Image (tube, rainbow, N blue to C red; front, side):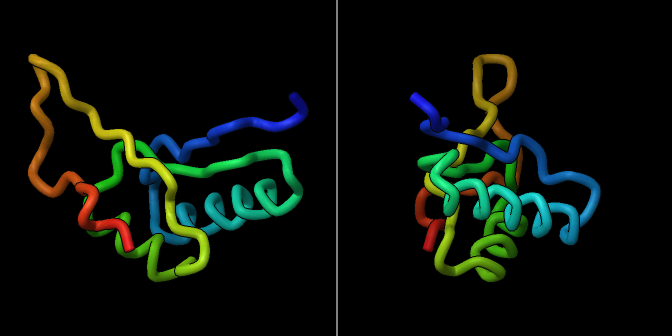
Length: 84
């Protein structure tokens, strides 16, 4: 294929403005047809809500959270109900 099925922003980054700019670029790639879905990884509730508020028409389609026997998540991890 000539597109990615899923492209994820893997970190909240150093600032909210950096996250917003990265998401804006990912939306542009989606509009160009180079990406089908965009998502996030390791975002807390606050970061997810900020992103969703800034781009209500382009919320994350996936949320990947770190969880395994040695790391059972952290306080503030976002959950399905945090998606708009």
